[in-house]
Each structure stands twice: as C-alpha cells, then as structure tokens.
Image (cartoon, rainbow, N blue to C red; front, side):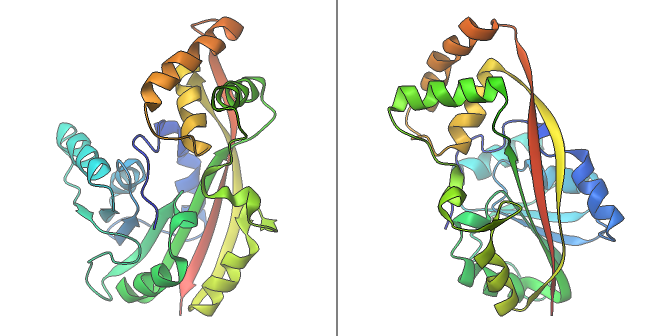
Length: 255
C-alpha cells in the first residue's frame, strides 16, 4: 500500500486542464457525480474535481497529507471531505460512487485487494479512472537536476513505483495491469496520452525530481536547497524551465 510523500504534487500545473477536457470529450461528466479520489495526497486532484462540481471525497492513508489537504481546503473555504483510508480499505459505503479516480498512485497498491475494494464501493456500471503523469527525459534542465541528485546520493535513482523495472510497458503502464483489471471485472474503455509542459524554477524542479525518483525522504527540504545551488550556478538563480510532461489516462468500466 502506497503512502505518498509530503508535497507529492508540487505544481498545480502538473495536472493540466486538458486532462479534464479530454475526459469530457470521452463522455465523462463530473457535475453532480459521486467520486472517490483514492490516495488523494494534499488534495490537488480532488480540488480540481470539486471545481468541476463533483460530489467528491478524498481518501488518503497518510495522516500528515490528510491534515495538509484539510488545511488547504479550510483556507480556501472549500467544503471537501477528506478521510483516512487506503485503496484496499477505504471505509466508504458499498455501491455508492459513480467514479473512482486514482492519480499517480496505482503502482503502490496491493492491486488485487484495491480492485476488490473499488468494485465494492462503485455503483453498478461505475467507472475507474487511473491516470499518471511524468516529466520526459532529454530536457537540459531535467537532466541537470537528475545528475545533481544522483551525484549527491551516489546511485541511480529509479522512478516512483519502479515502472522502469516492470517489464513491458504500454504508454508507461505495465502490461500486467491490463490483465489484472480484466480479471477483476473492469473493461478497458479508453487509454490515451496527453503531452503538455510545466514551468518550474530551479528549486521546484529539484523538488519534483526528488519526489519522482524515490529519493530518501529524510531532510528532503535541506537537500533540495543544497542541490538547487548546482542549478543556480548552471542556469542562473532566476531561471525558469518549461519541462515537457506526459499524462497517461486509462478509463475502465465496471461490469
């Protein structure tokens, strides 16, 4: 079971408006729908669903992230419930939700148990939307940030969930996931990729790399500040970087 790191989603722009527009084009309407956003972290994705008039609840295993999500919502006068629970044991009512969403977290679940739990809380013919996002290699600033982190830790850093070690991938998702979904009563309806970019300062980019590449969590803030100096020296302290991103979206029907 995955427990997200603090600040798991650093940039609001990491979740593009185009993601929700693309779902609308595929017949996914959020207005008035009951949605459970599982492993909701600090609530970034949850709040974007609420902005689209969804009746949404965030489910998060980390007490620290849960409190941060509630704190942000209170400051914004948003009325979004956030509850402590896991993908495997949400604590939500059976047959009560039109949609379940999972953003950047599926790789960390006990997937067999999570699928049974999601099946339990979904209404008949409900939908599961699994999405992910990642920066793309090759950008000069991204490579410099990764090099700085790997030099500091003295080892290669693997992406969160170690998908790179998962064997054959289809648009960044391990092939075995599709077989698991099918086996547990979820029919693949659509699967697609969105390309976009996110703008980062040097420090924000280091934070993103540290979180995305499974860097040890101890003293992350201090390490980020120290490593930021490397990027400041290379690009200038006021530099901003348009980093290429890809979002991968899978829509599944429960049957």
